[in-house]
Image (cartoon, rainbow, N blue to C red; front, side):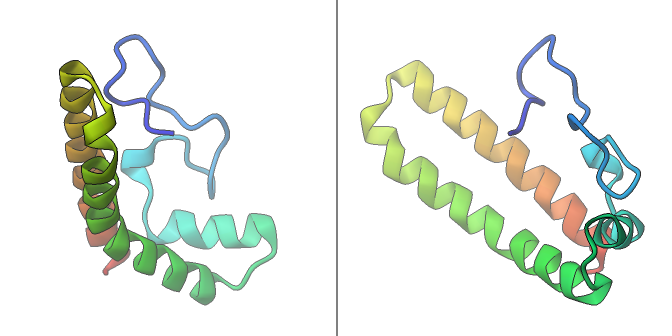
Length: 99
């Protein structure tokens, strides 16, 4: 769940992922650490992370477009802000992953 646009909420993950609690600091080393934490191959998890990072921007736009007709004007504004933030974070993560 993205909490970055909610004032007063923590920007940290509820638990560490590969030794990191800040989403903006996640990168290849943290994905490798996460793979070790959960007993997965790090190359496979890196591949999954890159694939997700490539697909999220289009998926979030599609989701916002699909739900917008049911939202109030304020809800549409909020959904748009959330989409911008998620896409920005995803692009930065993709760059850190080398995607």
